[in-house]
Length: 68
Image (tube, rainbow, N blue to C red; front, side):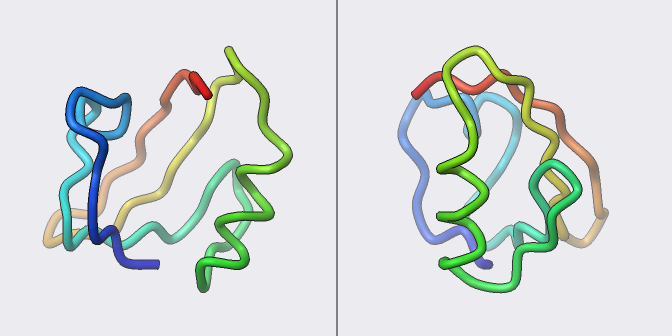
């Protein structure tokens, strides 16, 4: 799933996620489209640690603290 927008000052932006990045996984669940993303996010609650696999020119793995 391609990131098309970020909340200014949000956790994703603070962690270095940028528009154009591709989210490949959340908490070891493969993300192929927005439906996969929505399902993964629905299972999370405030304060959860979230692992995010991001594909860019230099693939990286991020762990974020979720704040809904």
